[in-house]
Length: 390
Image 1: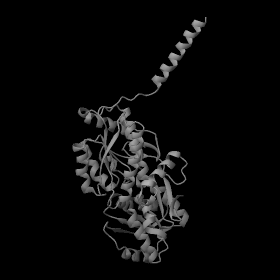
Image 2 (image 1 turned 180 degrees about the vertical axis):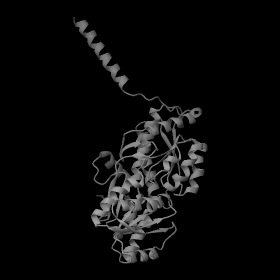
Image 3 (image 1 turned 135 degrees about the vertical axis):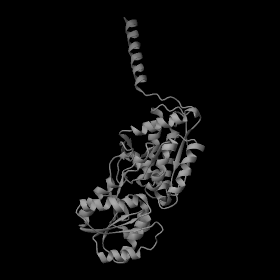
Image 4 (image 1 turned 60 degrees about the vertical axis):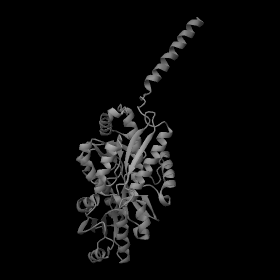
């Protein structure tokens, strides 16, 4: 009897162990000695803070992934370039990453102006590029190879405009925007006017400026004569801060609301007291977020960022991009063999296209049919020299 019970016990143990082995997904080890991933980070130019955030977020993720065994047992090697936040340099850089560096996938670029130029080229090059902070609506339609792990400006600004109006009693407003920047133009010409009308705010006038504009005094003088309750700003953070400074210098009491590129610590660094009360939005929540992954990331990010700044949402989403890249490569059967490069890139494209409910530090990421991320949005306001969730 004892022998029979022993045999039966061992058989049960064998069955349980077998079930556990079957239940745990096993990813095949990739060929080669490293996984090549490209990066496009605008660390100079008008979106430098956003590009730098993306670079730091990517580096943190790569170090963590490599320390935990890499992708398919291999370490990640990042080859990255500075696209200078401009459309012209991005084309040869995408070509270089694709043909010379032979990367599997590209994390970036950031800015909508660079995505607008780069994405159509992806159809010919057949390589996946994932933006981490581009927010101009419609850009992902330009290519099935271009994805954006972010939220478009219309989705970000709608709740912010509603709360801005309620807080300050906004009845009339003007809009001033950078006509040379893709997302700023669409925010200024299309999104803000539509949202102002939706929320019962009368648009008095629209003004446009160029990237190289340094003197905003003539614009502000004319705006002062109109005496609006609010000023909508479509620009990157530096211009937004300078507009606010000049408005306060001329004694304007109107309250500000800025587009997607304004919600960064750089706005406060440049604008100081002039941007107190400034409304914006974010596609990733860090202030007071209890998620231990977010707390850990912010702590590490501040060690590496200039002047110990908090990250923008682009930093968190660039970090998530790397973990999603790992997930897709391991789950879609990428081999990493030189002869399979194009097949592997297609597998990565398919993996991103069907991504659903990925629980990243920026929130839950799902790709819609256009290739844009879906997820939560938070309204921000500058208070006491920092952004707070409103």
